[in-house]
Image 1 (cartoon, rainbow, N blue to C red):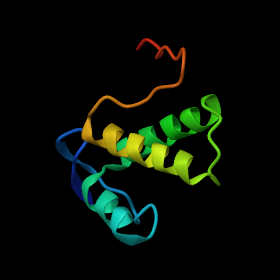
Image 2 (spheres, rainbow, N blue to C red):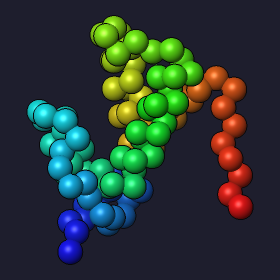
Image 3 (tube, helix red, strand yellow):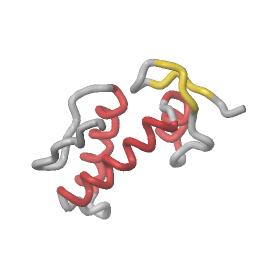
Length: 91
């Protein structure tokens, strides 16, 4: 049986991550409070932000921006989207 967490983004019990996504306290926090579903959605959104906004992950300012957007995304707050992005309509 997979482990479940009370997902901060979806406010319900969902399948949790298999391992912390990165080391340290932030990785442990994500592991304990973010579902696998929310994390996968964040990874897709993060990739879109990096590509569309041409973020440089060597630049500390760009990494801080991405961290802030991840925190907002997971908390259900208003977060940055790619310029001109229009989400696909559910079929």
